[in-house]
View 1 (tube, rainbow, N blue to C red):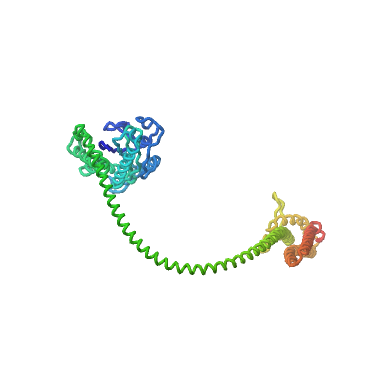
View 2 (cartoon, rainbow, N blue to C red):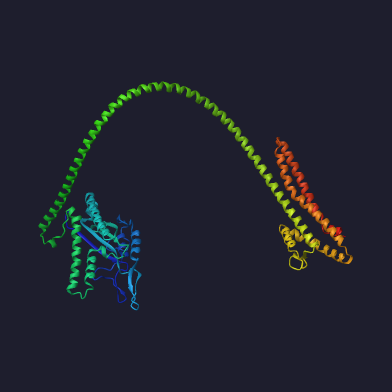
Length: 542
């Protein structure tokens, strides 16, 4: 590759141009346009209307990933780096106390580092000659590796590289970030040297002072050092010159000779490296061959020993073969017997499957009957609670503990003013809690009869008749409650006895009879409870 190197670097801020007198400048001091970092990334991606100097083709540029693999990742990384919060010391002028405060990075702080590497190869030549394109890619990879080492040593990161093949010269853009400090001045050799000079010498005075000239000289020296390092590590290896013909003050023929000499030196250096690598490889191969020859000698000795052992193994194998033949015949006979047993087991398994399905159907019917019995038990328990609540109401109302009140929207039972026994009242509440509706209904039936009874007792002094009637009612309701409570236990015990019968038909007939008997008994208990009506109570009291 003939020609001279071209490398340039620049930094950009999130805001773009500086704000002067309330107006944002669109041109820098050096005459360049004040691009923002976002615009720089858009131009690299070839976003429509972001790069007017290049016709839009819709083709995406080639991306060499660093810490970011795409332009979207680069935008997010730059946004994070340009909006970090920095800590700085603060001294209160009134109190003199020193503290630490935090603030966001300024919008005009340069937070995106860029560099461009251009080669003396036209895009047309590179696209038409694969060998030239491979050579260009080799130079770009060396330059990317050089910048990556340099930037990481300074505390930054090489985000990505982008190769453009849509302009006159083939070139590559490099993008760097500093997510810790936000500012990328430390990644720019010239700006870093300028900041170091200002830190050592204080604020600069006028632009025409000697101190200002020294700071500019420090800036230029640092940039020349970067160009020299880049030439030594990258461009000199492909035959490119450090300076162009004007800078070196060479005539055209001398400059062509210089380019040819540089290319020959690079080619010779490459050839020498290849020869050195070949010699090292040949030495390594010879060493490996010697080692392999020694290993082969050892393996031949081992093979001789193994041949002797294999002869003995052959005799043993012949004997074992005869035994295996006899064992094979025996195994065949066992396999036939096993097949017959397997067929028998399959038949038995099918029969067991049928029996299992029958048992599952019977279990389903049994579960349904148990569920029905549980429902009947719940019904019996509910009726028992209603009978017990009704009996508690009868006892409480006849004893003067409870009064039936119809003055509200709904009738209710309340404690009588004369009722002094708190224990009796608590027992009454417990007994009527399970069936409050039945208690209210019974109280309504007893209310008028008890009122008439109290009047007659007051007039005729029939206290004994009232006591007798109360005892008879208590006995009647007590008997009904016991019958209802014991019915569920008797039904479960009868089911256990029926389950012990051997014949399925006998069990079915016995269960049917038990169900009929249970239904009849429940109906009798219910009818007995219903017969104790308001008229019967009045008749017994009279």
